[in-house]
Amino acid sequence: MRGNVLMSQGRELLMRNDQIFVLLLFVLLPLAGCFDFYEDSDDSLHEYIVQYSEEEIEYESDEPNIQIEVDSNGVEPSSEHIYVNGTVLSGAGAEGDVYIEIAFEEDHFNASAVEKYDLMVNESLDKVNGISDGETFALTLSIESLMGNTSFTQTIYIKIYELYENGTVQYSTILQNFSAIIPFIDSDSDGVTDEDDAFPNDANETADADGDGIGDNSDAFPNDANETADSDEEEMSDGLPSIGIIGTLAVVGVSFVAVIRRD
Picture 1 (cartoon, rainbow, N blue to C red):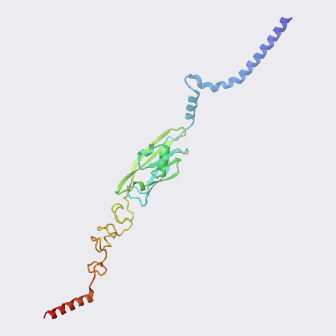
Picture 2 (cartoon, helix red, strand yellow; picture 1 turned 90 degrees about the vertical axis):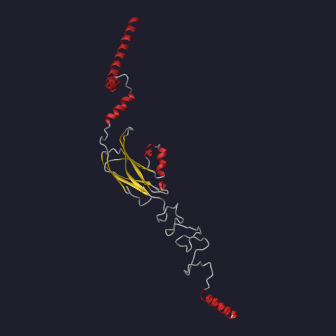
């Protein structure tokens, strides 16, 4: 009797296990397709996801076509700033993946993020991020830090590249065909550098030969530090006494008396 009971319980347990197995089959079989990428045991889940993502995203394949205008190209800027304006004509699509940077030194493009920030504060580098077809940009550089005692021609470097969301850089180009003439420092615009100008803020004076603080153009005696004026234009310093008419008559009178006494 006891054996019959055990056999009956065993059959019930087997039936329950069969039901659980069938249930698991219904749940797990539809998920089997999700693991097809494990065909190659060397592939990791991360590698497959990256590969799948790159295949799904389609980026603009054409090189960006950009119209660029430099307001002072080849000439001296009208102010202490150089302006670079432009429009993305084509090649960027609608992804907003075109980046443009301008600088006075090509090495500035390789600077770290912190260094680029400092360069932008000093207006030695400027950039625009993520623009698309049809969008315009306006970038600025300051020439103040470049100005000195001589005038020279400075290249304006322009870097154009596409940066995708996955970090891929494509079509990186650096243009070097733009330049500007950096003028020397001349505060009063008299054509003489401040360093060589004795009066850098006076356009009428540039030299002081005798060092008396009066410009040579205003100094009646530019080579005499003790004298500066000649109001009567007699080519005698105002610092010396002038005898005038009365003095002349007095001299004549003294001379006449002296002659009479001698006779």
